[in-house]
Structure formats: C-alpha cells, structure tokens
Length: 188
Image 1 (tube, rainbow, N blue to C red):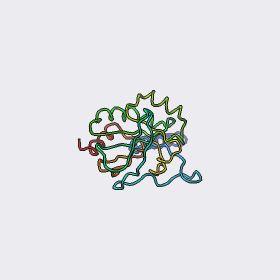
Image 2 (image 1 turned 90 degrees about the vertical axis):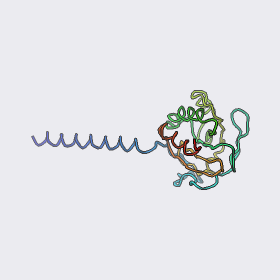
Image 3 (image 1 turned 30 degrees about the vertical axis):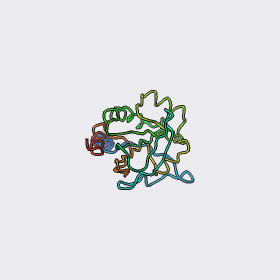
Image 4 (image 1 turned 60 degrees about the vertical axis):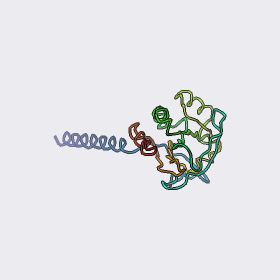
C-alpha cells in the first residue's frame, strides 16, 4: 500500500516537472551556443546592446553583390547570423524569408552564414532548401560574427535607418513576435 502511494506521488511530481519544462521552453527563445573568441572560450556576453551604432562591415553576397552595413540607410535592416546545422535556424528560416518579402519596401534582411562555424557547401544547400530570397553572405573567418560579439545561433540584429542597433534577438521568436518587432523597427 505504501509502495503504491510512493509511485503515485512520483508520477505526479514527474508530470509536474514535464509541464514546467514545456512552459519554460515555450517562453524562452531557442538558441544554439557556439564557440568563439580567443582560445575557443564560449563568449558569455553576447551581442551589442540597443542604442549602439551597428559595427560596419561589408561582405560579398552569393549573388556577387557587395553588401555593406554601417551608418544611415534607406531601410531598416535585420542582420541574421546563422549556421546550416543549427536546428533553431532551420525553424526560423521560412518565417524570416516570408517576413522579408512581406516588408521588402521598408526592410532589408541580410543573412550572414558564419562559415567559420559551418561548411560552405552545407550553407549553400540550406539557402536552396529554404529558398531564401534575401541576400546571403559568407562570413568565412567569422570576423563579422566576432565583431558583433556573437555567441548563439540564430542571432538577429535589428538596425534602424539611422544605423543604430534597436534590438538584438538571441534565438527564435514565433512568427508573430518577430513580425511585431519588425513593425516596431520599421514603423509600419
């Protein structure tokens, strides 16, 4: 009798723990930590903060065009750092692609594959699989990701028309949350 009661209590505790874990997972963005920085140490403080000028960079896109970030621009910008092996990046790709098309008149999206943490061939297959319509660049040495103090995939840096970082999103948001951030960024 006492053993049956102990088993019942254990089952209730297990179910409660599973429910708490599921709720926590849904309320916290999914990310994949990456190794970076000197000596392969995990970067503990990820990303620049809102209100800072976005670090300047230019990279060649897969279409042969050179894309630059830094200073004022005609449209707001999202710089999306990703890797082909990152499951949250795979989850985010279709939504980010759809939103980039929906807001193309007021928003640019630049996909930056951190090729130093990936294989270029896998990244090229990722681009084709998800039919990415926004410009994608290869950060071959990880210099741009390091410049932005990247530590997790995906990382989305929301930059205003004034060239200032408005928000840094670590991990995946729901399509509705991401769209809400885009509306706030662009004033649409």
